[in-house]
Length: 324
Image 1 (tube, one colour):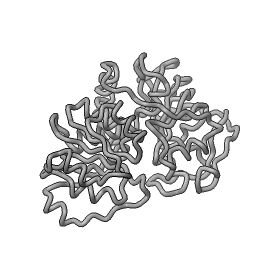
Image 2: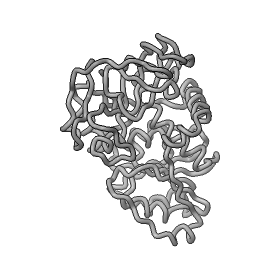
Image 3: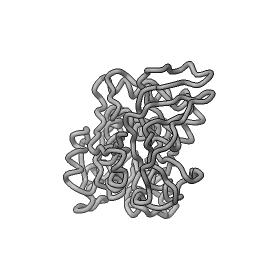
Image 4: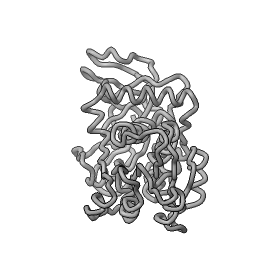
């Protein structure tokens, strides 16, 4: 089978496409014939050795995907051969076949395409966990989404609207903001042309925002903290801008707000049944038309370098998908 291989740490131009032996499902494992795989920001870090997880070289990157169950190992009774499934795994998704733990595989609804399913678990899982369990978002609150046109950003726009919030989407271009409006954002801010602080003040009548969803980091994080309402929660998701912000801690006292870390992967592994409940609730939202995941950028497995560039150069609108 063909697989993307990372044989030395570095940028995506060091990745290769190689013919490797097909894996076999062991005890408690599932072999999936991969139809689509989702590319996420952690995938850009793991190949550089900059992520919390550092697999032994060589390895196949890719943390999530979707396909058809080809074989199940001993003791697996949650899925069967022929099932349409999504999966999440630390590595291995950027290949024609993958073996992963049965606990990381879930059947998908008939109305869900492989392309949507391939990019659903991490982005929507992270966003829903952040809003529901970490921020405890309430209907009627205001949510500011930074980097709102990216995968997790658009997921958050949709989910926050479905949960009854007023959503302010912030992104770097008007083209990206148009996508956010289509996804349901009530207000948009082009933070390349406009002052993020002044626009938030204007849109909230000086009250500030209740929840900030921040996958960007950099200079915008402190501005967002200064723009929060009393009791506000800023969700620390990631640092796509490349810089980890240093927030003056006195701001938390003065603003009566909180910085809340969101590490979905670690949480889901320790709370698998709650994670499954979250997924089932989101599948219901999808069926009811409250969610409409955008898959705007699809690449063949052989174009993996271009797929990574789409993500790292922040050109992506919605999910970036690889198709074996």
